[in-house]
Image 1 (spheres, rainbow, N blue to C red):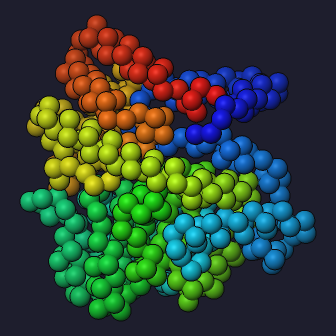
Image 2 (cartoon, helix red, strand yellow; image 1 turned 45 degrees about the horizontal axis):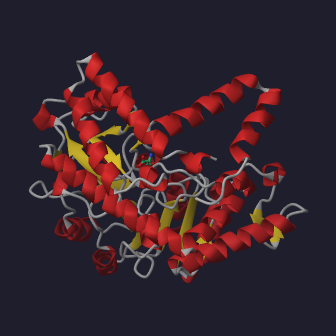
Image 3 (spheres, rainbow, N blue to C red; image 1 turned 45 degrees about the vertical axis):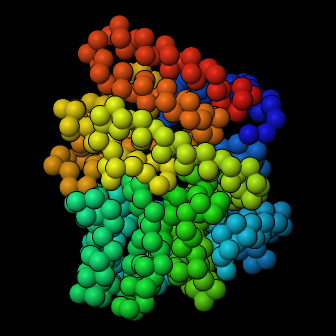
Length: 424
Ligand code: DSN
């Protein structure tokens, strides 16, 4: 993760001189991240360079518009950063065009809808409770109120995407847009098959790769870029950049997309985050990034395998990517109880619905486990074996404070061996 730097200490000192309360919260958060095994599949640890760029002078700058065509003066240096970010994103993913201004993954999806859909149009997307995302359309979400949403999911037998169902629903419902991509799906997605179906029914195809973008950039998951009209992603998950979003598209959609982002749905871009995206894409273009993504996948596979060997049910029987779901039902536990028990020993996961879950979203049957963060810290297969053991012991010992305390101690010892940013 680069050389030691005084960066984090400088942040605490600078903030502390003005606001000791916020300084204390920042210091405590840093300690929390250092002292816990974070297995939240959508989180990662951005590099000091990414963090520094996103806390930089562009915070002070307004720059509505795009490089060379802004509504404000003084944008020349942000133009340089935004051009770098766009060029690097295109190089990284082999895309025709990139818009790096979306503030988040949800915003990126809304901006694609704005580029090609009218209110009332039909979107075909993956059910939220089978692994999809709120912004792909759901009754509690704005997308579900503005568009007509039809669904596909995974098969009950093997918990894998049912491409025949996608085709069946697409032909019956004639959606204007098909969304593929997921937040909690551990298997390879066949983007080419989705593109075939989209073509058959005359729909646009959007691939949301927020979770697997790093794997795609590294060539370790098939890319949707040759097949989809639009590809959206966040920049902070496996991609390991600053918190934000991005849209890639075919050249023919460039104008409509850029117009939908600004002035369609956003005002001034977050220039500091755009600069940090440029830095992150440069990091992702380096050969070490591919090694990192390889290790993320190997770690997830190993952790899933070791937990399965201890009798836990892994949804779909394993994983091809950076995450997997574990069904706690067979252990007479709920996702919430497991999340709480693991939290108590310093292992952070999130409760998650599993496909065909008989329970409710706030107290589902599963937890979601991912390896991007622990892998960034340098943990490997031996540590995955240890983490599987610690998870099993924490869940088994949840009513025994002494046993939980012993697990907590071992979690802390493990974390101390792999400090954030190598201890910087
Ligand atoms: N919150 C993200 C995740 O955890 O997958 C999706 O937006």
